[in-house]
Length: 100
Image (tube, rainbow, N blue to C red):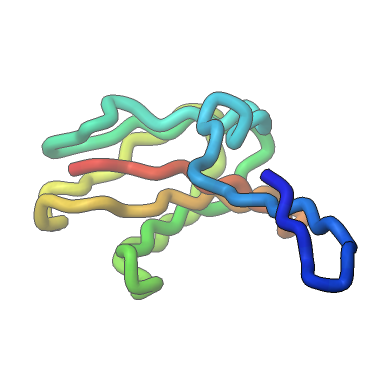
């Protein structure tokens, strides 16, 4: 979309209306099942920890890991949207949206 100004200049407007989630997580991290009920399986290479935040950014679960596939108990979480971040040994992280 373009917008013409009174002084004759033309400005291109850019609107972001969503995120392509298929390209959002290209780090090899997977979280399933999603939506979840009692437990989730988190698969990631070189991961050191898994953290789960609610939509306000409150840390709800933090778990150290040492294997590629991990099971995380999410029974205590209420229904809603959460963010599962997997942090590797160098401090890089990948975040996946989780629905419960």
